[in-house]
Length: 171
Image 1 (cartoon, one colour):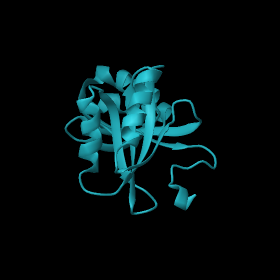
Image 2 (tube, helix red, strand yellow):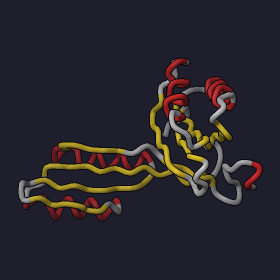
Image 3 (cartoon, one colour):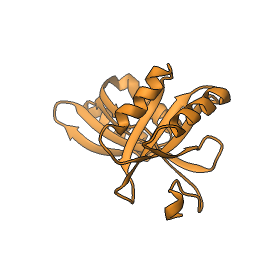
């Protein structure tokens, strides 16, 4: 990620419409979301949103302040300058003739990617989980084979160590 990309982890109430309200806040303020992932947490009352957004520190502070004012938002953390584990998922379908298979499998081995499907119609589906740069690098290496289709998740992040993004009642 570049120096202006921030990873925000947002603990929200698990209620209908929360995603719409939070993403709407970004849209109304003219902030573009680079990546978004929403998932359940260990407590069914809450969901976790991981948002990557570009902007300088002043803009990110404004976003955090606006998020904190939302009734559905329990807690916001900027993981940009903290030690965290951040991962994305990539599924990519490429052209792959029989003669190219071993070459592509070798590339996948280097990246620790999994081959999920090899079809008789000369296509292959590969899965990779990793940091953004690793995902980008595999896409670029596979591009000459012919990327037919890809699906890429938003990132998910957890802070390393004892700190959690839980409410004070659960700490």
